[in-house]
Length: 173
Image 1 (cartoon, rainbow, N blue to C red):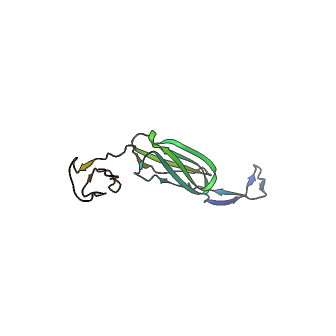
Image 2: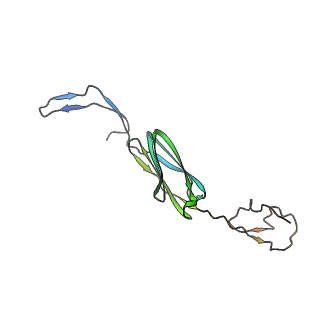
Image 3: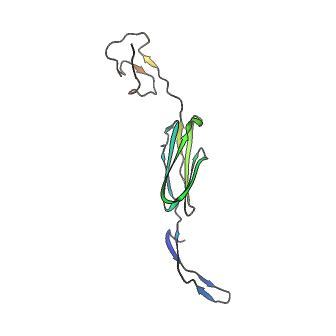
């Protein structure tokens, strides 16, 4: 096996009578048996996905990356071919409003100029298009409480799943 890198070769031809000749020049070529390094940069594993979610994939390869495929749930959603480049970042905007609610698997494959292919391990994301339910659980409707109320979680209880910092937008009288 010839190691990766630039290699020079000459050719010798021998016929059945034992006559031989050598090529007059060396031919230089690159051996590349190493597949590209590929990773899904975004979204991260277990991330929620909603609306238009950017799927960002990056790859590096000494021989140059020439094509990519991004797959969601095993189905190719974006395939590109490009001029050979040592590193490449691909962005695909996924319209999750057309996807079923729940878990989805994202993988990506990149191919280098020598035909070596790397496919990433799956990144699982969760499509969630439904807004949270907001309910004031305390104080009870029409009750009277004293003191300052603005953004006070000690006086107002908020249902789970909602950020307390941004949960109370206004109190009207």
